[in-house]
Amino acid sequence: MPILEGEGVTKYFGGLAAVSRVDFHVEQGEIVGLIGPNGAGKTTLFNLISGALTPSAGVIRFQGREITGLKPHRICKMGLARTFQSVKVFPNMPVFENVLLGALFGKPDGVSVAHAAEEATALLEFVGLSAVRSTPAKDLTLVNQKRLELARALATRPQLLLLDELMAGLNPTEVGQAMELVARIRDQGITIFMIEHVMKAIMSICDRIIVLHHGVKIAEGTPQEVATSKTVIEVYLGE
Amino acid sequence: MDIARLDLRKMWTPALLLIALALFATLPLYASRYLVILLTSIAMYVVLTGSWAIFSGPTGYISLAPAAFFGLGIYTSAVLGRTSPLPAVILVAGLASFLVALFVGALTLRLKGIYFAMFTFGLVELIKYFLLWYEVEFTGTRGRFVVVVDNTTIYYVMFIILATLLLTAYLIRRSRFGMALQSIGECEEAAAHIGVNVNLLKTVTFAISAIFIGMAGAIMATRWTYVDPYIAFNPLFSFMPVLMAIFGGIGRFGGPILGAVVFAYLEETLITRFPYYYMLLFGIVLIIAVVYLPNGLVGLAQILQKRISERRHAHTGR
Ligand SMILES: Nc1ncnc2c1ncn2[C@@H]1O[C@H](COP(=O)(O)OP(=O)(O)OP(=O)(O)O)[C@@H](O)[C@H]1O
Ligand SMILES: [Mg+2]
Image (cartoon, rainbow over all chains, first blue to last red; front, side, top):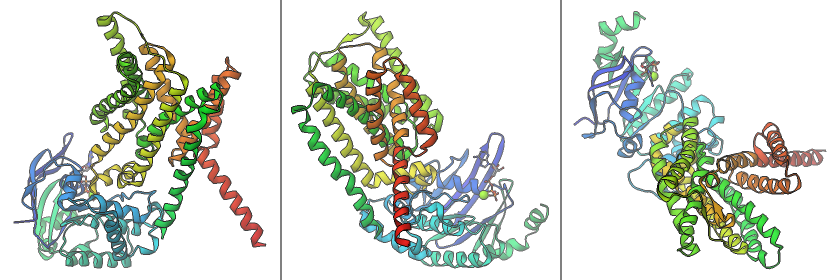
């Protein structure tokens, strides 16, 4: 059974089909990439999965249970976390509290504040933000805000993590560090579904890649298969 | 490390409040009648503003509903005052406000920004005109007399309401829910995505804040002896809390409280000294505050504190 699967997932904005009858699946333990030109519908698909938006049609299942149209907080508590393309930290709260909130509210059962604080401290260490734990999140650099979002998502103890352009705006060194981080997260047993424009990153790290174009899935396969697919090359060169 | 420092800062306010409470509890024994009445008015504004700040402060949802809950309290008092003991009247008023707020919150807290503010204000008018219609249609009256209660009793009831409010606000802020409320104000979408049930939390907090406003209305009604829907649902009681909170500074909980105390005191003294143009003076004070004190009185205090410590550093530096 796939950890995440979608059948005929569709989203209209007015007359525009931002996502159109997309079937997809993500297996336990995989890193799956989602690529496509600007406006292809990638973020919209993530919004449908995480509950930020309700699909116009189609079914989404997580660990075999239907989650179509559930509220984001319910989906999060089931074990599905995400980061955002445009960073959405809690700007005036200290870094530590950002992560603490994830640890306090993200799990199906209640946890003690002391335990959540321990977890948050460990996660800040993991993403390399221990030194700035008392800084308001808005004062961090972009790369650190992205790391913070990652730590906050991990604090909810997800089984599946959706990453929306984690590497956009980072310099080559930072991209390398981010890739290493993603690999380490996967090694902890967390399945990863990631949107990325940085081709080098996505080609080297993903087990499988799904390609969207104008809301439609046009290809799917190993990085090798996708990179040599005629349709995919046409779409990217045709831009 | 920073937890210890935060705790220390949080200890300050409750310690001061305890001393203040002891003082206020004994006050009617030696203070003048005028002072008791003045302090009751100030306490009423602190209750209105503090309740408003429990919800609107951290979440940033500007509620203009206080007058609706205040009016509900007043009417509860007018209807039940003759037949029920005062504590029961106060509790029923709180409960009625809680339930109405729960219902209204569940319906409207999906609205964002100005739409929420407008709807909550609409609520005040809606209830007012419903009551007017009801009284004309069914009871054939306009307005009601309220059972009179003596000033000392009103004073004590208001201070019990105020103390309960401050305790509640303190407990909420200290709890994980206080932190979650703030996260809603900072980025609601992200809050929802890390497991915060944003609609439930907003609705329940909104309803809790309404309890105190309703109770304050119930006790204040006994001072006015006669009420009708226009008096009970006066929009001023929606705007005052917002203005007082802005005046004091919305960022921290102490801000709205301080704002309400100073503002209410100003209002009471200006009314007696300059009965004809106190509103004008009032407006001028408010404009100056908004223009020159973007973070309110609390912001001003912080600026002064910083200046003083800088000067001290400059001295030791030499
Ligand atoms: N909330 C919305 N309301 C209306 N239209 C939207 C909304 N969100 C996205 N769209 C539209 O849907 C289409 C897909 O947008 P989406 O953000 O999913 O693309 P994307 O693949 O993530 O692109 P990018 O690579 O630029 O992030 C675009 O045409 C966009 O303008
Ligand atoms: Mg996108």
